Structures are given as structure tokens and as C-alpha cells.
Length: 281
Ligand code: SF4
Image (cartoon, rainbow, N blue to C red):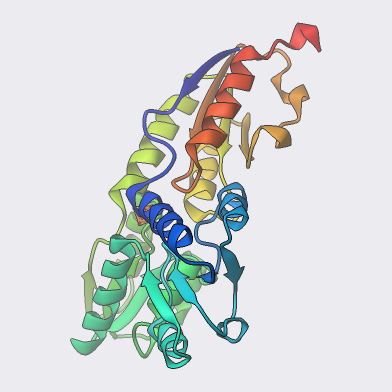
């Protein structure tokens, strides 16, 4: 099988930083917790768990030690609760996510009704919601009814959203009755570059694989984009999940991976795919 790998794929600087911070603390301390999965990749989380990282979802589950705030961040109230318990906090929030959090707070201070375009249940969005008194989350056009008529809107976007989606949402909002729309571009260039190189590669191959966690928003976005262009697109977490029958009759494959997918997952997948020969099956 001829295999091509997207020019930009795999770990971004925010995820790389969170992993290296975790590894450093685990080398120095025994009682280390991650508040939510440190990144959205079960293989990477399992590997860190073997080194002692305990992943918890509630403040009540932690009674001692050091707490790592993951790359998606956490709401200030949650961080305050952890501090109140006397726990040591190590913040590995991506600086671009921190920027969205900061902007949300500033927009509210300036008198805007803060709006974030993104997925309501995604931890990054939940953390941003916690950074201002009243933040409205809109995922798509069906949510536009949540926006109060004639309001002054201060708009930000989940970092990993697709720029075309952002443009369509702003266009739809522009047709509304809002007296002002202040938009701050909070999209992540790393995520955009991954989307662009995936969209380019999937046009050139018989079959396309998008590797990464099923909860990873940026990986899901890559899979959605590729599926629109190449219907033979599969979102998998690793090589073991591949149903080999989908390779039948295919001569070329493309591989891309989300910003939270470790190199070793990508390399193993590519190596196995290159060596794959369906005549021998
Ligand atoms: S995808 Fe972008 S915003 Fe998200 S962690 Fe990586 S660098 Fe930060």
C-alpha cells in the first residue's frame, strides 16, 4: 500500500507542553492528579497512568498532592476549589485556550453579551463559560435563537473550530438584529493547518485515515472535513481498530492525526499500513 502522511498532523505545541509538564511532575512526585483526561487520547492517557498519573473528574475525588490542569483548561471556580483544599496546582492550559478565557472576561467587562461558537460539552468551552458571568454557547445555526435581540455581542470561537463554519455563523448572525458584533479571532493556527493539509491529502488517495481520540474535537473536525471529500474516510484511535476489509482494492492511503495523537500511534499505523498486502490475507 502506498501511504502518504499529511504534512501537518499529530501533537500541537499545547498538547506537547501538557505532556512534558505531566512527565516532569511524575518524575518528581508520587501523588499527581489530572483534572479530566490530560489530553483527548486514551493511549497517551494510559501511558501516563502507567507512570502514576491519576485522572479524576471531580474536585471531591482529590484530597492531597498535585493537580495538573489539562491543555483544555478549567473554570476559575474549579481551580479556586482545588486551591481551597490546599492542593498544589500546576497549570498546563494551552496559552491559546487561556487567551480565549481572558478575552471572554474582558468582553463582558466591556459590556458585551459574550458568545462562544463551539461545542457546549467540550471541556475547553466549559472552561471559557466559567470565565464570565453569562456566556452563550452556540454550536450551529439552530442555536441562534439563544441570542438576545438587539444585544451587543462579543464573539469568540472554540480554538479548534473550522474557519468556514465560523464564517457561516458570523454571516447568519449578521442577518440578525444585533446592534454590534465584536468578533475576536480565537481560532488556533495549528488546528487550521491540520485541517488544510488533511483536506488536500484526502483528495489524492483511495482511502483516508484520521487517527485520534473519539472525544478529540479537532480530530473529529478533521474526519468530518475528509468525509466530505473522500467517502472512504475512517476515524480510528489506533491500528488495532482497523477493519482490514476496508483496504480491499485500495492502492493508496492517506493518514492524518489530530493534535492530541502521539507520534508512536501514527508511526505504528503507517508502518503496518505500508507493509499491508491484502493478497496475503
Ligand atoms: S490545538 Fe491549538 S489551541 Fe488546542 S491545545 Fe493545540 S495549540 Fe492549543
